Length: 382
Image (cartoon, rainbow, N blue to C red; front, side, top):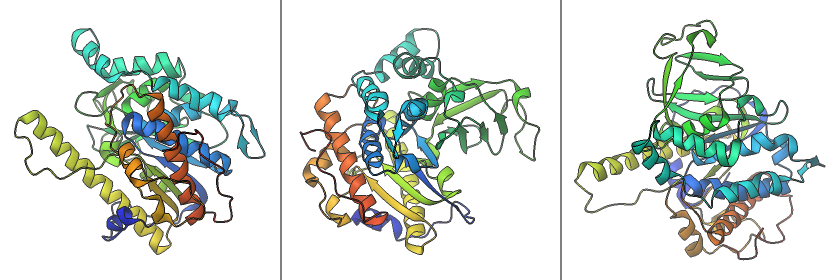
């Protein structure tokens, strides 16, 4: 667990928004949203977790929004990672390099323009970009049979709760479950990253007969089972925490989400005012999830670690951490939350930052006996 200045503030108030039961022994990794910033930052996290032997030990990977792009690629390529002695030898070639190539492309503005001017929705254009550049014709059934259970989270706009995509099922506990879904992976990731209002919603046209028989779900009926409206998973849970917290005793959370800043003179026109309100809602959801996480760590209910793009590495007090001046890392935390072209230099700095802060958190709160890193993945530092 990391108790830095940011997360101490989040831990001061108790939260009981998710009922807890005795967790299973196992490790879950949560990858937050945050556009390309999150997608690339989490690459550094995976890099260091792999070197420390933790990637092969994960039981679940739960993701939202930008984090789902990285998680989905990891799940799709899991069987090609060539694990030897608990270390994936092909992580860079199979996951990191393709994501970095994708981060050199802007897809949000073009998708919005095509969604307005051409047939089809904006979300369909985003899914097309994911299909073209990352996932091809892969479906949820291309996730691995062994290894971690991958859960891609979206928000059901109709019911206001999580809609979960995975290989064994996709479901909303108020609507019901579809077993062994063959939904395109690109569509699931587009739903998870459909940030409102421009990229949302994703609509799933489903046959109600594919749902398992009802089991007291109050909305197991059309249109909830025929025309599903989904938005960014971060609207409901911007850390991807819920599906991990309910099951496992060790929780690792990588947070690359943004931070709302005070505004003495907020906009009054309805577009910018709406954006400000959405930022407030997002900020509150994130704070509640952090309070739950940190309260669980402090009480001993869960073990694990939390780190973010906004963390100060010196607060972790781990020995021999990599040099990460907060003035430099704060620049990275302030990168806009978009699906927009990211220069190689910025990518490498973000990967280095994810690598370094993950290392500090793991070696301080989870496995102090592990060796310090020899250096950054890329020589430019943060």
